[in-house]
Length: 231
Image (tube, rainbow, N blue to C red; front, side):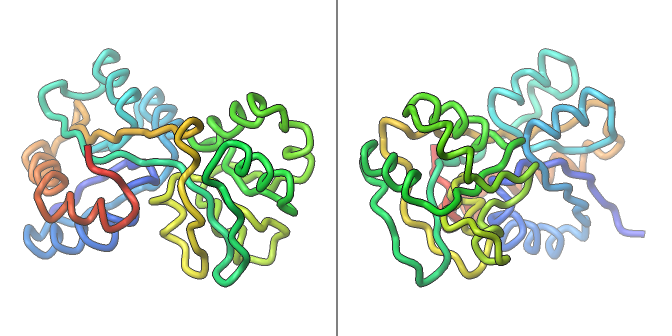
């Protein structure tokens, strides 16, 4: 039976891993990846419950917490790319201006419904943002809130959402949508992602190979091509 690795990964790098990194890694090593794609918040709950895994890919902040908790190796980590927040519409739909704070605020108020994720870092930031902008009540009243997953799916599945907000790399995993643009600079929030080997893994050697595959020149090109930014 072929060797395999269980990976718990944040959604931001899904496009890069699934389209480019995973196929090349599995073909080149014969090691199969079993990847569970979830928001960092849910991965942290899984780790707290001592669920088994060989590799985790989470936000930099969460990665630091896992080291402090003794869940991962401090010297077996790799910093990957940065995910920035953006806005998407259904392909062919009119694109609102989101380039400034005032324009962004107007776009949210004018939207029939804004889709965001309750569990993801992007949704948590969005909740704080609409409070800051003073539009929390009207936006929430018509929002399409999902527990977790890809918000851009709400643009193409027949729901009333006509805007989706999330990390751009996550938005781009869904066909039939177009990214309007990133959040305005003064509202932007970039999240770095780190991969780490989990303590207790019985496949440290194989995990180290995957860690290396996540930091090759080809991997960084894949991050860039799927909406992430390089550090």
